[in-house]
Image (cartoon, rainbow, N blue to C red; front, side):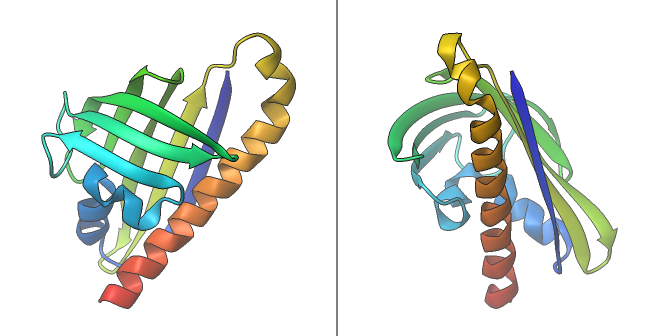
Length: 145
């Protein structure tokens, strides 16, 4: 099992950022490699929201079906894959003041067999991708306002 976390401070109110990170339908706008993200129901996540995500990572395509397992509205949510990879994760938005917040993303990926040999490289690649995604999110919301 590898665990990866990434955080970024964004100069926008937490409520505004929550509208982006808690709506999986927005993911292709700020997460590199996500070509399709189909949440059901659409809109902000609720416990039981399902997703069909098509993503390209490290040159390979993946189809990951997911399920939102818990939600603290306006604050954080967790999900797990129901098919595809053995992965779970979450996102959190923490207000720092009226106009700034910290966004955190985390992943836990279960590796099987010889995949363990690639764990250090995979951890670095995932962290870098998450950091870049958070940078894109910040740029998107700051330039949009």
